[in-house]
Length: 114
Image (tube, rainbow, N blue to C red; front, side, top):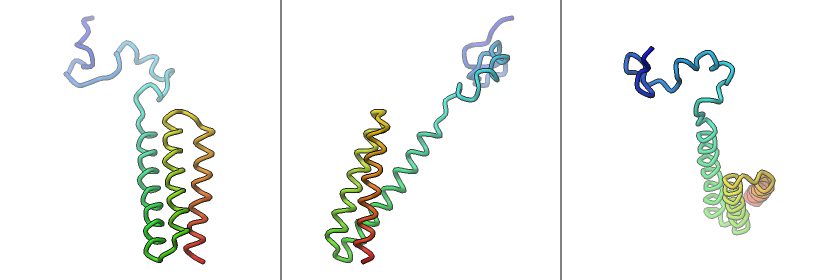
């Protein structure tokens, strides 16, 4: 049997799998193909986290709560550091800074409400 050029089947469609490997495809599982869901999830978390933190910073500035703004700024900085820890594959540092960010943002919300 003559094989088609790499990445194409007999009709010219792109095919990432070798036809001879179809019997082992189920054994390998769904993790074989590239899965970008994690990248999209991180992007959504970053965007909505930035909107929430930015909104909290804007609200505290508009109402003149300096301490609330500084807490929100500290929470944003801790969240930024946690993102770098995630990229460097440091899960404990990531969890620590996410916790710090959450505490600071809760403190900012409390100073805004009170």
